[in-house]
Length: 533
Ligand code: ADP
Ligand code: GLC
Image 1 (cartoon, protein in one colour):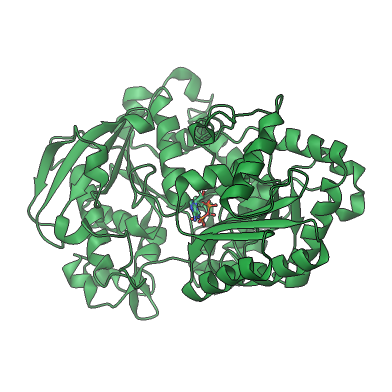
Image 2 (cartoon, protein in one colour):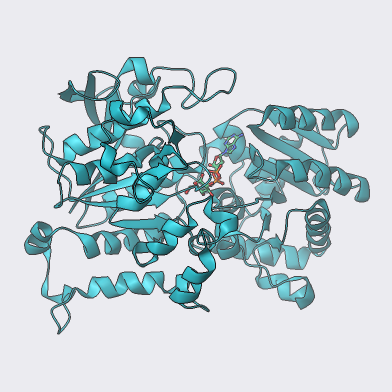
């Protein structure tokens, strides 16, 4: 079975957040799994070709939106050899940043940039290049949202599509005038098509026409059926909920492993040998201008400083915690909304030696942050999955997260009422709501656990040894792909054990089983009724 993943980001080639990590981790695991061959199609942004010096031209496109483009291909060693297809059109992609200009404004031609990517995917699917035709095209987020619509328009019914929602909050909604130059015919520009409040929505195009839709966590799959989390598309999602499945992300357990992490230099450690964690802590304190003290509880934040990540709330909760707990230290690594960045930068002056802030995006610093910290503060108003708290856990750093989305699924907290001893089998602390009080109370509760070293060690151990690897998560995608694979592939690859006595592929049942938690505690009818529009 041949899969073409279409994405805007893939780590380490291009990354602004979790999307790049998730696509790469998934592709790497699928590449290693028997029975599937996967390639990644993404733009040749500035600096990407330098990372794949062996890339060679495999096709030329003359009729893509935005002008002629070349397609280059190379196996990516950093991804375990996954073939990467780069769409090169320097006028569209050779820029300083992926999505925004130097002043943070979205590029005006983003519809063209990602429309061209979708058209390239469809040309590959149609067999207009020398590359083998894929059986499944897996579109990631709004950037690839036009793919399912264009596959349908091209009449490619023997190529199936999956759209994975990494974040409903970003939908790629543009003026209708773009439709013509993007090759989206008028018949799709209706409320039952890709039209969204008079505009053209890339995300809606994907959700409407994909054969299957997936979310990156169980809880998010339920949440997006509601008005609060559905970002205006909850009605469409409810109508398609039988094709909506949660396939939780994993993490790249090789990339994020304190026992082998090259970012930690000689101070590597593991659940069984933790001595070096406090050396990483002193190193982190030094880098962030904090007082060097291995006993001081060190709380870190490492994420986008945005409304989604509750950075506005954290700004106040962190100050309250610093005031209430004189031993506490805080280190912040992040970038995002300019006003929030500025507010955070004032904190070190207010709390000299106790609070350090670094504005910027720095992969190396992110690894060191998780290695040196005791606890990670990760508030979110919504969190489709949330890789960061899992990275923290792997480094024995206890996450304090909002009880939403993937964090509700992956962070295990017995609750304040269960008593501290029950927390031995917890991996983090969860809080409800979006208030400073709730967040500050969660920090206080976590500090209470930190002061009980026996409980803390047990939580660290549990957090570090929980398996969230992609090797565990990726087989669900294979099951999903097989359940929709076109007849030509079924005929070629199906084995007797895949078929039940009724002649129906049992893999379908496996996918339903995977989706079952989505429906736990409620009925499909209730979900639809509650979804509204
Ligand atoms: P999201 O994709 O919503 O930002 P995730 O937690 O799933 O949230 O993924 C965030 C990814 O981006 C992680 O790999 C995290 O380490 C990384 N990241 C976020 N901010 C920074 C930063 N300032 N420097 C380095 N890496 C960062
Ligand atoms: C998005 C989400 C995040 C998720 C990531 C990878 O950026 O905000 O929660 O972990 O995608 O799927």
